[in-house]
Amino acid sequence: MKKKIIFVVLISIFVISLIAQESIGIALKVKGDVVLTHKEEDQSAKDGTELENNDVLESKDESFAVVKFIDGSSVVKLFPNSILTINAEKKDGKLNKKSTMKLGELWAKVSKNTGEFVIDTPTTVVSVKGTKFVLAVDENGVTNLYTLEGLVNIKNKKDGNEANVGKGQKASSSGEGDIIVSIIIEGEMEGYDVPNSEILNINLKNESGETRSIEIEFE
Image 1 (cartoon, one colour):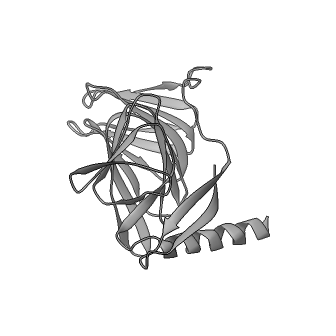
Image 2: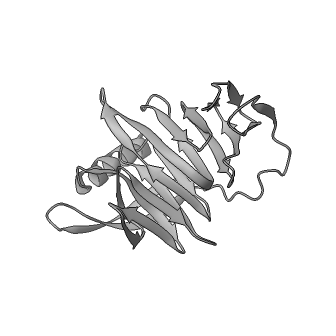
């Protein structure tokens, strides 16, 4: 176990050294048609694509993207037909992540004590401190939250109502009025392809243009 932890730390340091200073994350795995909008220009996201503040990822039909922030604390899987804008800033030695989910669904795993992790939806603000959860936003901005581990706070933007959602619970909000919290029904999460441990091979290019191929394990 100790050897594995040391190995993971060394890999994380190596990866960060290859990523440009402006980058806040990296696309670990991309399948299908995922469009990256960077500085108002569209391009296809690929394995190893570096991500900067205000980059927008839009996954099309039968497509997904797995994103990891550069501090190694958080992994996000964007499911098909979803739109996510990523943002983060360094403060007091930690990376505070604040992204915006316009539409669609995502799964996230967030480590404890690694900076803020916040996702804005059109109607709510979701705040996380070490957990696993699934977030779904429909075309009307209705937000559904499923907490798989830990505790997640969801807050309405319009009236300030909020609720803490624990492991095995779900919450639904239209952005105003009561936030409905209930138990996740058995089989309710079957439609979500939650990531398992996987070894990824990706190519990274440093500021000198040198390319390295490395393996990264995520789960």
